[in-house]
Image (cartoon, rainbow, N blue to C red; front, side):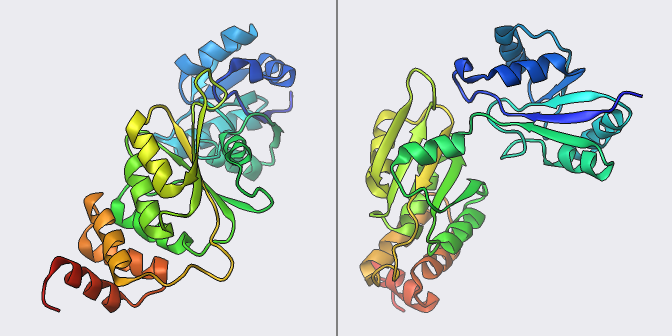
Length: 282
């Protein structure tokens, strides 16, 4: 019986010329290509002159689909896994399929290639010796703000993915959690004709992005916390950071908690600063 194998294939993140000869060979030699969107993958296969059959594999019902495909691989199927762009399983479907194949003792191979996270990190101009990848932040404002508060003292450079319709609110939350002067970069349209990198303090990056209108998937890169921690925020700065989060849709209670955790300030002190700024009695 033919030995099955899962080949995890990184694909171009925008420019199809980034496809490697090894990727083309892996896709052409596979019995089946599992992909997020067959329409998107069809463009890549056509560019490479590959005619291998495709099947869908996306987030909806991913666990069940992973078990089904892993069973087929275990019986001899040579399966290539791709996502719409970049490396499968990195903020894209793939982890469950890899795990299911390994559970069955099936060989798993990787064809490395383009990565939006690494490309953005390198082009951001921020330190690359130590970094962490956070992917997409939680969509709910309260959960997002708590995650950012936890990262406020992270010393490594941080890399995030974000959708264009959420990026300004996310940058507002980052300004509140990390401070407007924390260095950052917003990278969009990587490897494409209109690739753009906005570098500078987070507050300025946010305003520049708002001025031109965010388009396309974005990668945000943020410098780690400075050694020794940030200077203690004034009551006015604390109140302003809470106000920024509230304007972005966070409740006052969650905003106060997030700012308190991000700045290392007692929650009651942050709340009092908010009351003072609003002219309300304590």
